[in-house]
Length: 502
Image 1 (cartoon, helix red, strand yellow):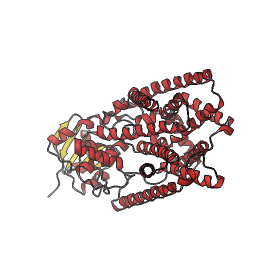
Image 2 (image 1 turned 90 degrees about the horizontal axis):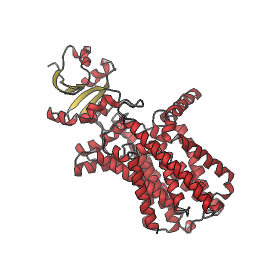
Image 3 (image 1 turned 135 degrees about the vertical axis):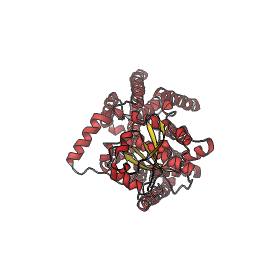
Image 4 (image 1 turned 30 degrees about the vertical axis):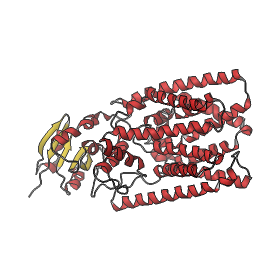
């Protein structure tokens, strides 16, 4: 019977993913909100595939003064995409598919976790879908942003954590170690989960309790070893990434905390989040559901499962600490909440666990189920509309229409005889990789409103080509003495050969 429930869950997951445009997104190139970050990650994958599969030398198209080698979060997803590019040819579909598999694996693991604490199948479904119907999570479910992969691996790690203490085995602890290590390596935020797990074990020594785990006392020390491995690997990788950035003078990827400097900064960022991101995190109605769940937990806290309560509170305070450390980034990045979503999952799981203990009255649970089903339907509908809003090329949130011609320009670049290793200056925007990634050329990215000094710094290295989408850029004084020679035009994009004095 359980097997059929699992199949039903997977079918529902696929149906909801289809209804909320996840599969539509999988067909697209990087676009819309945060295509800057998408192209940066996509650039790493493509450079692995076409230049060097050396895992320890991740590269981007933006070379600046060097080879484009850069430090970043553990690039396992980028490398996996590069392997697919090698096997099947270049298509961002493979990158998106890998991300979706890890995302779906995380949600399936979440569903399996509910089986350890809930009896009612409907409540198990609601626990997962109510916390995962975040428009932000849906948008990045099959995307290039690594936070979703970290989230997926962390939820898998939680499943293996709970499984291990019920039926300890070398295979389960191995899977746990791999998943929790990857989660933390990809995004350090996921370390909150590992710290909570270690906290559960420490608390069990203090309380002399086994937290209702069958084999807890005899197996718990292995979690310490797994935690040491995960934290050791993360420390090693991020130290190495820092070394790469310092050695190759790269600043593509943020590798440090971004705390607010004062209360005024906190106020301004909080207002921006309230005006923009809050309704992107969850539909407005869901915040009322959060409030109800929290009030219910406070009201019936004496009936709370001590283990789930410990995890919920751990994520609650861990989330507060992370938000403070990275608060400035929250003003600019909607996806920073993704690795904090386990907080919402464990809140619902704890609430439903208490609800099942209160009464077995069928009519009561039916009434609750109908109400929650309405929330799910609303969430799906809101999510669908939100994804359509983001995919609109004139979306006020990120007017990406100016990049549209770049998304299809690469075949023309090849027609001109340019190779992916050729160096060019792309004058378009402030991003280091958007134009260069779509052109599939190495070189320098300069914003169209930057001064001549920025272009002069790039021309010191004598790049062969100049790419612009505004011919007035040729009026710059730096191009007057040695005018670039036009070699081609693709829609709004103009190509020039740079001429240098003998």
